[in-house]
Image 1 (cartoon, rainbow, N blue to C red):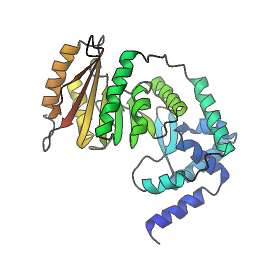
Image 2 (cartoon, rainbow, N blue to C red; image 1 turned 90 degrees about the vertical axis):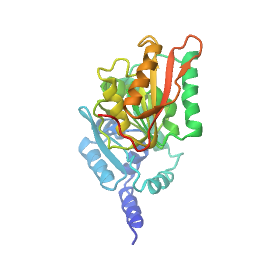
Image 3 (cartoon, rainbow, N blue to C red; image 1 turned 180 degrees about the horizontal axis):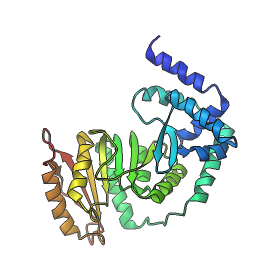
Image 4 (cartoon, rainbow, N blue to C red; image 1 turned 120 degrees about the vertical axis):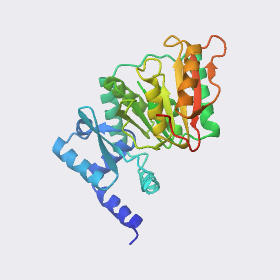
Length: 295
């Protein structure tokens, strides 16, 4: 038999158990810890762990650590991704058990987290509109948000990406982002602990990388830009955000020009948002073909 047929048989065998089917349906909608899944399923942790192990062995789920917690989610890898998507599409959208499980997980997250203050003012809406405009002509592909915080950019752009990953050093922020993304129904996002100077990703892994208002406070902004360039695919885009109040925008624009030139990135003219009394600077940079960042 072809490998794709053998994979399908493996997947179907793994999903023959109702509990594993419920676990998969829940993890399709967002990543969760074994303790969260144990509470939702109302079964013992060893039994849930065994079910999760079988789903991981079948390639339907992946396990990763974030601080002291181990998380499970559907595999974001591209190998057999099309077959997995077709399989996930067969999950009944009107199954009451799936909805009850999801509601329980949402209630857990709501109880764990604090409400994120509503900052959706007019200037922020203009920034979001500008970011969305960038996705119209050129798709996001695989997206990485460096300094993802409580998930603002991931909530805005995640559903437009092939997959989306947020990196932040703040564990509380990552937990809040997970809660927000789950409640928003954005299923293709994952959160990771990460240092912007040493990201846990392969070279050329992402089509779009966002440096999410992190350069103004960075100890080594040039090093952060070079690391972002390292994981950017040829033909990819680096989005740089800066906020007035944390940095002087005129100074920041001059610095970005120097940093990008040193990293062999071609910087388009930055956009000030709004044009009058700007609060945000949004810039797009792309690797110069055939050239790597200067040492």
